[in-house]
Amino acid sequence: MMDPLSAISEDLAEINGQIADVFRSLSTGFQKLEKIKDVNRQSRQLEELTGKMRECKRLIKEFDREVKDMEIRNDPDTNKMLNEKKQSMVKELNSYVALKKQHAANLESNKRVDLFDQGPNEEFAEENVLLASSMTNQQLIDDGNRMMDETDQAIDRAKKVVHETINVGTETAASLKAQTEQMSRIVNELDSIHFSIKKASKLVKEIGRQVATDKCIMALLFLIVIGVIAIIIVKLVNPNNKDIRDIPGLAPPVMNRRLLWNPN
Image 1: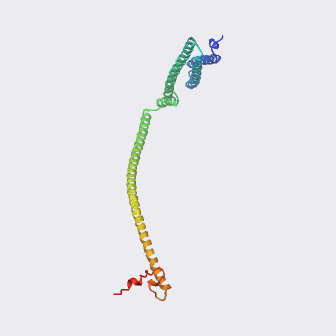
Image 2 (image 1 turned 90 degrees about the vertical axis):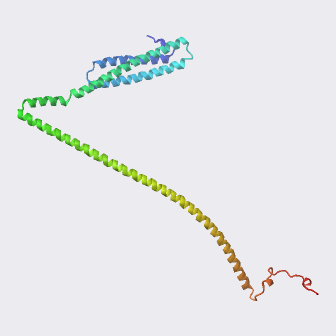
């Protein structure tokens, strides 16, 4: 039978067919799940159905995208029909999701029942009943006393473990406290070091300024020494001990003798 959606879009018809196939598979799978008694097989079947539901959800999203892409080209009645189709798909998928949750809860409950009602404990209990029926009263009393002693020993071991745990916790707390105090001391020392570094920086700056001043003074002294050395060299160059006025360029100007002569 031809899908009515083929007249609207071949892609929509194909996606709708895939979703219908998944829904049929889910229906058959859940019917099969109700007939399975083994817990492990039920778990595997439920996982398989969960994967199919994920695939169905992906196909419905793809169907919705196609509908939105065609919404402008379609008439209002067609868009309404497509949206109702999508809502029907979502509703059917949600019903299978609810069914899956119900089976998962039942499966978890069955696992807990199997854990306590089956296995070696049941065989061990039956073995104990058979042994007890073949034992005398004294043997039963001795066996009961032995079991009580083993229980007391187990309790003592548990107490020992608790005490050791408490001791370890106490030692750990003391160690943490000591480490906290050590960290506090380290922080205080770092603050002190930071203050000392700032103080040392100021002192270095002061020393730098003093050194600069000392350099100026040394330069001035150097110039004075150079001047003295120059004078000494001049004296050595003139062995006749001429007066400084006789040295070219250093003698004062000679005044006019007419101005110096006084006729009176």
